[in-house]
Image 1 (tube, rainbow, N blue to C red):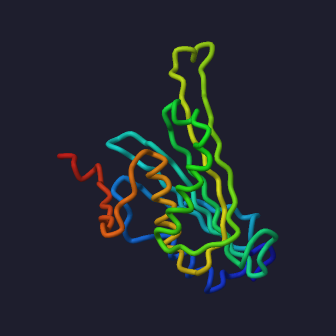
Image 2 (cartoon, rainbow, N blue to C red; image 1 turned 30 degrees about the vertical axis):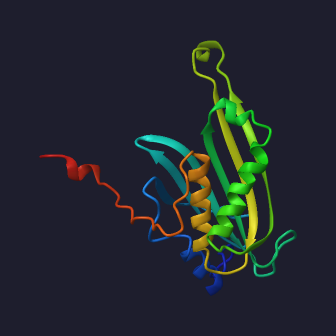
Length: 198
C-alpha cells in the first residue's frame, strides 16, 4: 500500500455494499451507483434513486452506507446508513402540521415492513416553499418535502433497508407501497438506441 492509498475494504463492508444493489426494484424507481463521501468513515458506498410516474420525476433520494470497524459517536455498531429523500408535494399537504411525524413514520413503518432491524435512528423533516421573483416571477410556486435520516442496521444484509428506503420514496411521491404478498418486477432498462431505425 502506497502513501495516501486507502486500505482494502474489509469483507464485512464488501458484503454490505453488495447488498445495496437489489436484483429487483419497483418499476417506478431507477437506481444508480453514486460516488460515496470519503471523509465520513473509513469505508463508504452510495446509491441514488429517482421515482417516476410516466416521464415525471416525483422524488429523488440517496442512500449512503458508512462503515467504521471502531464505530463512531452516535452509532450502534460499525455500520451506519444515511438517507435523503426529496419529493414535490401539494401546498396543502406541506402546510399540515402533522406532516413531520407522518413522514417520519413512513420511514419507520417501511423498515418494520421489510424486517430491517435498526437502532439509534434520528433525522429531520423539512418543508420548503420556492417562489420566483424578477424574470422568474411567472414560475409556479413549488413545495417540497425533504427527509434526512440515519440509523444503524443490525445486520450486514442491507436489502431490507434498501427496499424500505425505496418504499419511503414512493410514499413521499404519492405512490402507495406494494402489498407484502406482491413482488416487484425486475426493471428492464430501455435502450433508446434500440428503437431507432437505420
